[in-house]
Length: 113
Length: 114
Image (cartoon, rainbow over all chains, first blue to last red):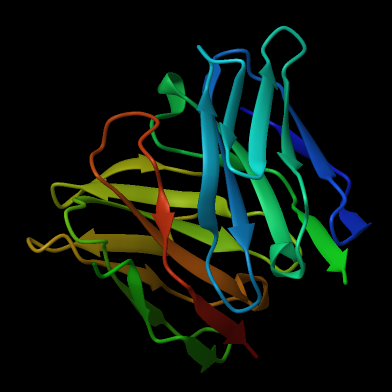
């Protein structure tokens, strides 16, 4: 089955700096890659997603890039703010697994004011 | 627009007991999935329900079962609880059973097995 690895496990940045979280996947059939933000005591919230026919997608301060050849994708947050502090999860799924999403182990992001 | 709602928010059980968790999907969604999230880990897929049937199942034992009702709400049942079942149980809904539909999560039920 699919294996998603996520790095780093923890990340601290100064407010206003950029943060980058990287994920790799093993199944070349995976074609949908969402990113979720989970705050303490809450469920994961979808913040951005990308499909395999697109190399990059941006939404305000958040962007995601996908390299299908290398089987890795990354989340980029620019101009970080304290409210960006949370745990971020990447995930992957393919048509072969229906809607079964495989998640990474998470990155705890702390933005220092 | 109501999002995914789950109940209860917290639950404490002892080994060997049975538990039922409940979920109402986001308005307009007809497909419900359940995930288990252990402390410090990413969510793991348990199963998915559509049209009141289990459509897909992850690597979980038969002690985990579910149900979907005509109004699309769903229940997750876990029998013969083990200490290792302690986790956050997340319900997620999507607009259809088609592959790679956006998945929206509820806040979860925190289950503690003593």
